[in-house]
Length: 144
Image (cartoon, rainbow, N blue to C red; front, side, top):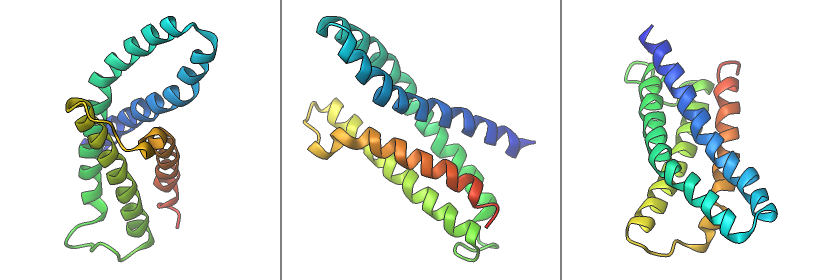
């Protein structure tokens, strides 16, 4: 029962996290075309200020719950690279660590008011693509 609860929490956090990235990429960019600049800025500030509170917390919970679930399939008894499931799980972990690293990098830049590397303009595209790959791997790893 405890594992199932962690799975549900993990799923909700993934929905929040990927949902925000999807909204930023597809909804907010289209709003910029329709709204006046000052209206768009107000909407963007309102959404961003709320997201800054929810986004890191959902990512942290997502990573912690994912770490808890990994222990069921990768541990000292089962090994790390002994099955296809474990290999795909390691790939998921790698993508998740890349996403988390990018989020931490972005937050540090915001805190210290530094300009991020220009490649970070495309970070949400990477996050959405990686998130989709992680979701697909979550299902495929149990059937290969």
